[in-house]
Picture 1 (spheres, rainbow, N blue to C red):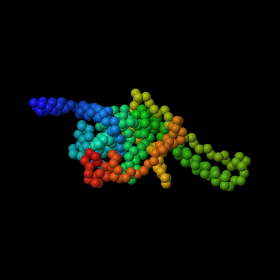
Picture 2 (spheres, rainbow, N blue to C red):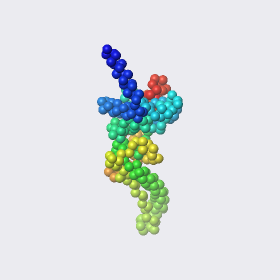
Picture 3 (tube, helix red, strand yellow):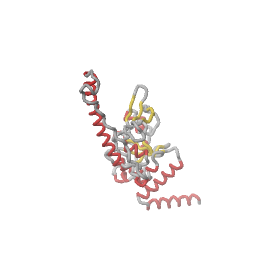
Length: 289
């Protein structure tokens, strides 16, 4: 009798599911994911740069993936977008960002449960991807940013860098003339005054209230998405990540103080570097690679 009742419940659930629209299925899928995140504090979602096309294996795990529904091919679930999301757990699950946005409010999870992937990528010789300013600030402030303000800063920064380059040329010429050829004191020798460098712009006024949150999709579609990315500076002893922007409270360009090393190609992590290693070894399921 229990088996009969169990089968009836299964049939009833299948009937209920069949009446749902794709959007309703997606929302239910998202509610399940939200409950899982609440019950398993160790798991997180990472935003990743997708590997080159010939290395793409990851398939979207959204129940009603609209991209897969539109594709006549059985490979329609493969994530061909430039960026993708991975739910890092015992069995990593990949998603189109657009699908994940329909399932769950990603800004509410950033930056504690939804993060930028800082793992190494095999196709970058083991180095991590260096994320642009807009994405870094979106995660830092949980989506509460004004993209137009950040774009204005990026334009101002580019103008500053051009002016700074011109200044360095002018200063070099001035130093050669006055310091090396002129024996008199500055001011009494007739040489032009020492040139002054441009003032670096400050990144400010871009944070918004929670009522004005922008979506991760808006950031990913912005033409300045990859502009002003962090830079990896290396020396004989260490590699550090340097952020070029300046904010009023931060003073000079910030460093995160952490050492960066290329990850071994067989180290276990959910990055595309590791996926490619699994593919090469022939030991991965389709949704892992």
